[in-house]
Length: 210
Image 1 (tube, one colour):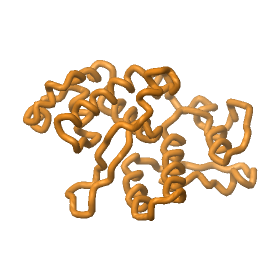
Image 2 (cartoon, one colour):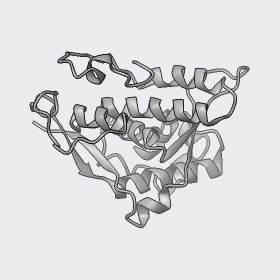
Image 3 (cartoon, rainbow, N blue to C red):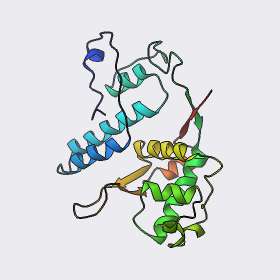
Image 4 (cartoon, rainbow, N blue to C red):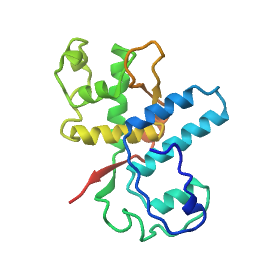
């Protein structure tokens, strides 16, 4: 996965074909390198550009439109008739999921009341109603949102949805310290929950269609 969307052919207006081999977990490796930089506008810019790559990979929106916006240029046509989305080979479509986003955020906040360090995997287990030891032993099955996501999301769909919330800075990440075991970041809620509940920020869920 590239760390930004600086595509030479697109900048030079040349026809090109590209394929990104994408795993969201690759973002953690890039984030670890970015976090080693001194806190500055440069570090914030690198993090924002990395999140744009994530959104480019997971959001079913015209790829050319996303690239043009990435370079702060104008492109009024919503369809390029060239990328996988516009040609119909991408079998996903966006649906309004602001209610689901608020449910995930509420679940995350309530888990953090019980234990401060919450990984993506733990959030998924609680929201989908797992009775695994790490959930029951901490009484996380008593969290009000326990199991609320089981009927709305499969495991892979929920993971994809949380990835998107992270890329949109709705859920923020805290990287583990150098002496901590494991590599998965800890999650916490950013300040955008209020914007979602007030309708100022629309959250779309990408669902596969037949």
